[in-house]
Length: 170
Image 1 (cartoon, rainbow, N blue to C red):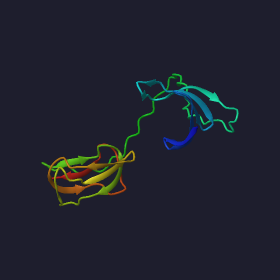
Image 2: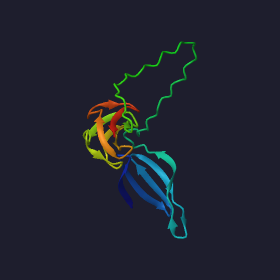
Image 3: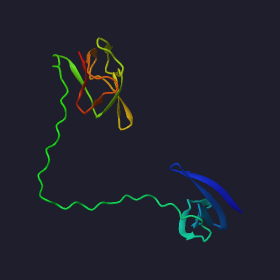
Image 4: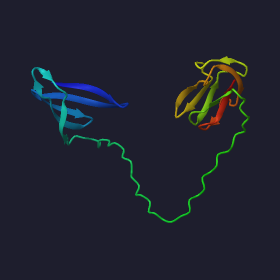
């Protein structure tokens, strides 16, 4: 008797049929590929089955899909060239930080999604003041100390680099 399964691996579905040939030996068909599988039985406990060999069947109508391989490019040959000067990032206007004030800087480059506080608002070290998106993750930005928001230097939609000043807390 053959059992039929639909198995989903990393979002792709495979049609699988399993037929026991003898105790501990099975024929497994996975989308047209036929495998001979052994499952050792010890002390009444069946362990995980592992494939033995792949036996292509003549009834296959399409070739099996192979995983994509990354093509490796040959290493470039060394040629004496003058390195191009590194581009200088555009400087954002900065206001002097007041004595006793704390600066909230961007920990990573990204896009400002939300500004959750306004100037004059009291905040603690546990208050989320800005939400930043970086590499499809949302990061919550907290002030380094308790205080009052003196200035917010970004708005939703702004792109920031690591170290850019987001806000000033007094």
